[in-house]
Length: 302
Image 1: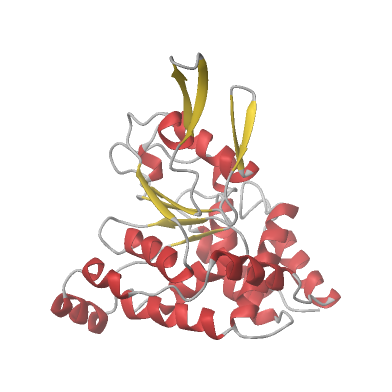
Image 2 (image 1 turned 135 degrees about the vertical axis):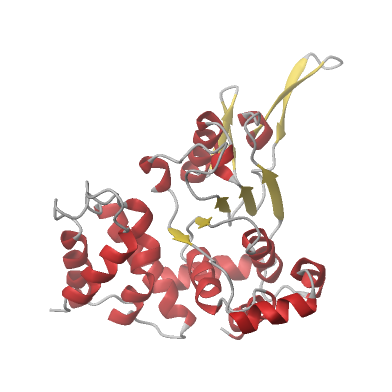
């Protein structure tokens, strides 16, 4: 656990004033999930993704999503070799351990769908041949807020592929002042050192997945799921798959505390990042995060 603690300290030294968000990002990857970061440009989304790859010792690729991007630009494709009279598959940037899909909602729905299918299946098929993606394999996607020009909002079924959605927001005044005095944080990224290897991360993921969840705590998760299924709150409530995602994230959160069991506080810490992007409020203008916080206040552990 010392290695993951060292990774967390390095992230907080680079991403100033955002310890909660950096811990959520680490928990998401420890749980084996993909991460969606939604925020306005310029608040450190790309820097966080690149920093995570650096401190976790992962092979990193970045793709800038644009309206003219094609699925093959991300997944790769077959190239004909005239001298050999055959096609050869050339892997795209998705064949990396950590892929940053920058501004994913600026690409067409066809490209979004191709990437999200690879995220779900952990493989790419071309010309009838299946190519396995690396292990571990994570996608961190950044997204501009809906309504900005040139964006294609991700549909609900594709949002569900992301274990968590987080927002960095503007830094606190003291952290922003330090940032202004210290310059662009990307210029000091070379000082980061890998605290883990890919093999270490896979081992930690297995350890997180084995953490104990008591029957009472499983019942608490069920009560939270059922509370989101009130028709006056959301168009559709959380699914059983969302419940499994909530438990996976809570286990990873508990592991970061060095525990071998999950507490109710772990569930509460990850509930909104895991659930908010999966829900659409019934009333226009309502905020799903605020409604979920209200549910947390009303549902008690039996």
